[in-house]
Image (cartoon, rainbow, N blue to C red):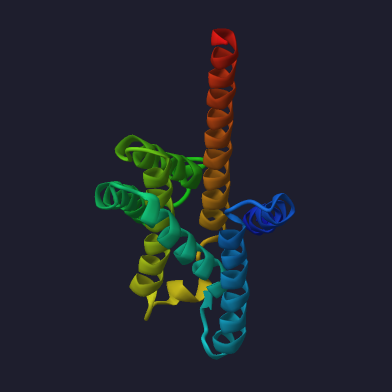
Length: 194
């Protein structure tokens, strides 16, 4: 992808948290520190290996998954089923690439649908999406080690990184809108009662 959507979302969320002085700004700063730490690791280890592991993205994915996992109540089943949907995607794309136009987008949307249907709420869905994509990218890297495929594979896949960032941001926007609408409705009903 030409436009780094995931990085743009990460840095703009950190700037918004900094300007609003919100309670989540420390978590956003943590994501930025994970990004910087991963970039340092990438600079240290990447020249010595032949494949491309984007350590900064992997660090952000792991840290984000660990944070949302703490908030989630149902942790295992949504992660397992979403991960299974992503494994089916990888097997299909490896064996039959290009059969369906937009196959990576279709399978990614199916994985998000599986995560939202099996999760009990917002945090469970985010934990399933983030965790499944993180472990899926690591599994791809570990499965392909020793083959020529790993030489041409970027871990995490640029599409997976940008799609995960967009899905998590869209889910956060929908949740923030729903919470704000609920708050205004309760304020209006409270005013009507007074």
